[in-house]
Amino acid sequence: MSQPTRRQVIGWGLAGATMTAVGAIGLWQGRRPQGAPRSPRIRPTTDGSAAGDGTGPGAWAEPQVLASADGVLELGLEAAPTTVTIDGRSASVWTFNGSLPGPTVEVSAGDTLRIRMSNRLAGPTNLHVHGLHVSPRGAGDDPFVTIAPGEAHDYEFVLPDDHPPGTYWYHPHHHGHVAEQLAAGLYGVIIVRDTQPVPVTRERVLVVSDPLLTADGDLAEPSPRERMMGREGRQVLVNGQVRPRLEAAPGERERWRIVNACPSRFLRLRLEGQTMLLLARDQGRLREPVETSTVDLAPGNRAEILVEATEGTSTLVAAPVDRGAMPGMMGGRRPGGGGPLELLRLEVGGKPVDRRGAVEAVPEPRDLRGEDVARRRTLDFAMGGMGGGMMGNGAMMSFTINGQEFDAERTDVSVRAGDVEEWTLVNSSPMDHPVHLHVWPVQVIDDGDGAQDEPRWADVVNVPAFGQVRVRVAFGDFTGRTVFHCHILDHEDLGMMGTIEVA
Ligand code: C2O
Ligand code: CU
Ligand code: CU
Image (cartoon, rainbow, N blue to C red; front, top):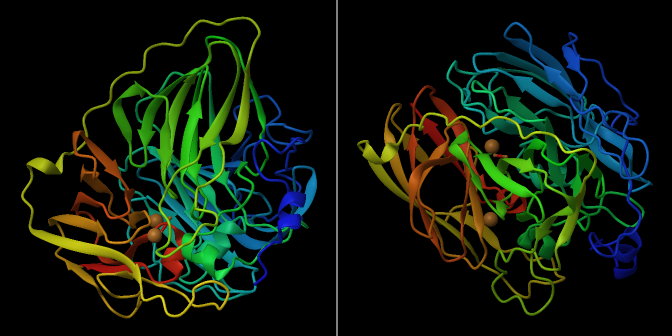
């Protein structure tokens, strides 16, 4: 096992209270700047503060934005080992195009997005556009593609004209390597532009990630136990930085697009002292923004929030989340344990400005509760079969759906195109499993805590330990074969993934 020793962990600094230095990572410091096949329009980040060069401790930085023009965006993404600076120290990670996170891709509904994905890693990889409602066929969002080291693959994603605006993301999806490649730094944001504008002072992208690094800043190998729990890095970064600092004037309203790109870590976000409203989650806007004190993001989830600055200095924290434990786990660190982690600091000061205009309500989305259900299914997410002692000897528990581990050759769920189905997601294990379906968003009917009032659309739904959740899915627009899985990506890599074919 090459789990970092306790000394190394302390050396690298536990995130949160014990961190004193606040560092910044240069988004432009990567050693492998890469050109795109054809130059897309590159727009500087909207915030005039420190964004862009990312120099200086605590400086705010966001990934470069590549925006579509005239209905098309073409770009290259190269996954490669890269040396970056995190918290003032050099770290060896894997990035897209030399930046951590990779570039932000901005498109509109109806656009065509072409990406040449190149693999400069030592192992196989591929690319997935998480949450986008696009075809899994042809050069589309096909999770069965293998891009061998040194090779490239040309993807083409065609967004339907009515694609919901919102915050989505991209990451590699090669079975067996997904957790490893996300924990190493491979992810980026996809924005589908608004159709109804939201009046704000500025927009920010916040990619939250927890790379798994040793004290020396090298990629760490998780222990078997960490894999079964779902690996969690010791430091939680925002846009590749440790606790960056933001400034706003009283009365300003910001829109934050937050992505949980951690392979396993659940985020319970709080921002005390300022007003926080939930604007959108995963798939589309809420009818109207709702004031909230807490935003919960399972791995893979996104939320858009409005932050209305009032006064003083506030900290965005990730509070600990109990996501269960492994069967027979005696003592030791529970996943999600520890104190609250500080993600960023917002300093409100200067001359007050007038609040921006009201946020208009958006039309209610489709509601499948009134529609005919063609078929009902139950999917059981389970962990078991622990042979021998689990610690130290490398023995692994099995991670299954309806008793089976992932097999790319087998089709687990066959659906008739156009049908609405109702799925009951059962968790018969003592750990939470955030369940994710590709291509088709799901409507949450009952999240385990009770039925929903408004139609709530998502693409990752947490199924609590020993709990169950009911969703409905409308299999419209596309046919083809893809996957559903637990978005604790170690669980997915260990087998908790199934295949689905819509024909
Ligand atoms: Cu975000 Cu199948 O993944
Ligand atoms: Cu996905
Ligand atoms: Cu899981």
